[in-house]
Image 1: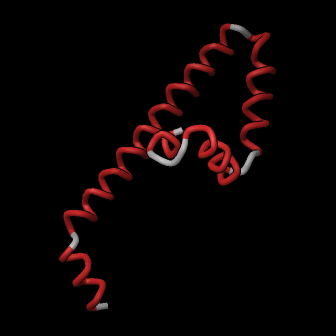
Image 2 (image 1 turned 135 degrees about the vertical axis):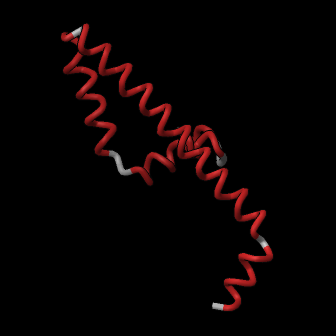
Amino acid sequence: MNELIKLVTNQWQFLLGLIWDHVWISGLSILLALILGVGLGIFISFKKSWAGVVIGIVNILYTIPSIALLGILISITGIGNKTAIV
């Protein structure tokens, strides 16, 4: 336990930076998901004929495990913040 306390006290600025990066990436991901979700919801409320298509696509994407999507995205966007945000 003493080793952990020493590590945290010696590296607190680095750890704080990592925490900030995590909060920033998480917040941006949530904001983008909110914009996309509300936008699609408004769209299908006006275009009822598209509701089945949009909901079907979303349901298909929802069934894919997130770890598999991460692997696919890494091959497309590479490793970095962009992949984590998407």
